[in-house]
Length: 505
Image (cartoon, rainbow, N blue to C red; front, top):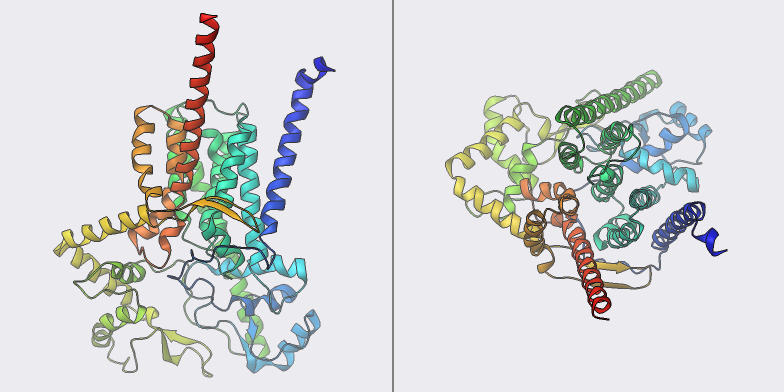
């Protein structure tokens, strides 16, 4: 019996058992937070952005007829395909293809599809929720990360890291208590890490195809998630860093991996845009054929960049009148736009204007859609930075300090209890840790510490208030690495003591 337990076959079976048990635990643990009675820390939340608008209204026709974007102002009598067809016949004046800026503004037009997970699970296309999709995506990412560590024969480390990341109070709150899309940056970070962590060690996976597959999977995953929330897109920088530092590959092979990543991301992004544009065209044709008001205004495929940068400077500016308020930006641009477009006498410093793209007032013109607005905002920001670079660098310095000090607690949480450490030192200590890892040439740990840093780019480059700093996870990786180093140090000390005892004995 003992000989069998020590055989290679038994060890393989044991590894499989460890994997299965780990995955089952992670699933059960995360699903425990789904209960309404689960104790989730509500202090850490994101309040800076709008995120979801009226996407839930557009799920009914998407689910039953595949039409998107399409919603109705009329009462929905039944959650059936027949009712959707009746609406197209009898409630034509109530049909609408947008509500405010739900569909037309920005590149997050795919987030409506997230509701379909709840529809398929619970059968309600009238009042669907986002939480089921987000919980399952986050749990899948954690399971994939544990599997990656298991594959590298580092199961204990992977399990502990998953416990730390899966206990993030900000992430648990935005998944289970905040009906929005703010969980995707951290979820996709863990997903990309699970795909690429085998390439972060000196020894590559035995499967020669894995690096190419990882680059394709990373590009495709990021392009798809980008249709839900664009904030995590900078995570591609971490993937690129992994590829250019794979010492086991030649420079040409590393460059190919970066190229494959870029091609996979570009092709998938193009495909998602074409898919959503085709859905819009079909929905337009359906509404027009029924005699309704089809949307004829612009559709932006990417978020405006300079508008949030303008408003974001208000997190620390006390000099040039910036504020995290859309209307402040509109008020600045208003006189210039009126001078440029004299016919826009009704233009007011607010997002939604009082004239429309249609005759019945369903699709109001938005301030940001006025020609020349983005350029005016851009020129103002660039001019102020050029005129006073010290002012701008002072803002960046304060944002950096906020990112380092306004961190979420680190610990282990369950649906009924939590044990955690919190304080401003958690992030600050990662700076000397990074220096130590570099000097001691612990490259794997250094890459691990740095991998999540792009999650803080938004807080550094755009706006650091309103909980934006809570996206940062580098301090959680730092706590994990401190633990690993402490364990390795204790183990080395113990082995040294044993060698000394045996030599003296």
